[in-house]
Length: 566
Image (tube, rainbow, N blue to C red; front, side, top):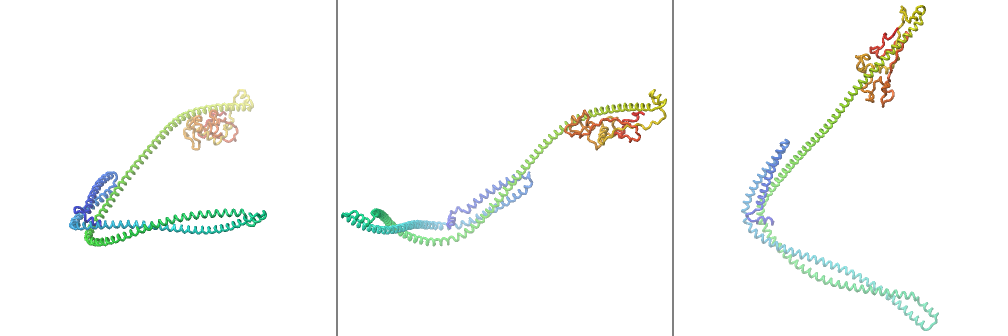
């Protein structure tokens, strides 16, 4: 109510709602300006992003729509502000009544101040009364404690009195014993004999025990007397303190009574002031009822404006969040593009490194291949030379074997002729033996002698076939139509064993004295060298036909009938 009265009593040239509306309008204009700047910045960013990524067009369009909507809301806000100005102009007609309300307000404020002062005094008096009441309660508690102590001291005094009576009775008993002793001493002093004295003493008492009891009783009496004196002194001190507390309690009770009287008077004043304020409040309420109706309309419009402002602020915050999300998405997209570009560049660099490594390895392989090809060419040339030498050696061996075979045939022919000469009879035999010639007559010569080589195994025949099928041999010992090796045969030697010890040797060179077996291979792993065998001649017509040699199978018979003599 006071706030409403203050608002109604403000000067005519000013109005809080209008000033607040003006400030709000200025703030909205500044926000509008900032929004325009942000919109321009967003448009620039969106144009830059749009050139790179077409998918931002829809987002930019959405932001433009939101900006248009907010612009329309600001226009609506300005219209509402115009309506508020009209309402304010109507309100100025009712401000003439505020002067009377101002005077009443001053009187009411004075009464409120008086009431507040009286209330403060009453509270202060009540606090002091509570403080005194607490002190009185504290004193009463101390008084009760002291009374309890006095009761304890009285009980102790009674106890000590009973003990004193007991001690007095003991003292009387001791006094009686002392009188008896005195009589005994008088009897002893009369001059009795020693035996009588001893009998008297023994009859009366034990002297040592009596002396000890007397001393003990005297000490107990002295101690009890001291305790009684101390308790009496303490009791007197407590009684003095009790009297002092009684005086203080009386003083405090007087003060409490005076404060209670002041409290009653203040309560009466407060009641009068409350009645006065109640009447004034009724009048003020009646006078402010009409103001309340007018202000309720203004407040409702102001609340509507406030709600609109809140709505606009929420929309603005939503737009800011949308813009922040767009910027965040743009940053994320830029970062992802940068990462993808870096990844592609890194993969390209790795691919280039792999290509360079592969190219280097390829060049190394080319160099190695070229080196191996050069070595292979050199070894092939060396192989050709070696095969040529081997061929020449074989040719010489074959020629030697053929010459030896011819010599053997001639020797056998001479032996046969000598046998024939030896077998001949008659004059023809004599003539023949004399001249050394055999006459050629019409007699039957019989079957031609057969030359039979020793039987060869299948592996040896395959070795001879490999040798005769070599393309490096001359046409004398080879067939031009059989230049390719057979599939079942072993691969050819591409180099002599001293240059390639792990490669296969020529089959016919295994076991040759000039070509030892290479190291690292088990013995007898290569075919053995077969030396040429001399032919065997026989005259047995029932003998089986001679086994054909590999050269005869290939159509190249080394020996024919011209090598035999009849």
